[in-house]
Image (cartoon, rainbow, N blue to C red; front, side):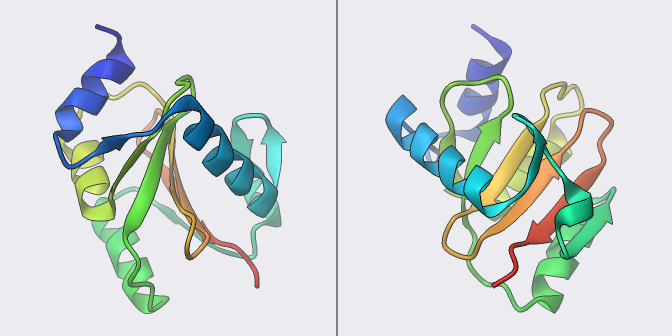
Length: 131
């Protein structure tokens, strides 16, 4: 079992594994909404509404401050060909509890256009697309 398959299994039954086509559609929407430096890193200097975070609680607080209530998200691992659709609380709990996480990831909400980028060192960036 690959590390990504293990992560998907850890998320449990409420996480829906997306097809490669669905994953591609959501990733294209993400990359058309947010500026990228490379194929797998957001250019945060060009995102106007953003916050750097080290703790999950900072992410939750920022979402409350921004009055964002939509929490159905797509979780992409940067080296995986498939993503999962999952509730934000479940995705954040997963990152909080997975101490050995080595894969960088994106948590993207396509209906509101916010994204959380998770880095190997545990740092997170969250941003909202300008409208």
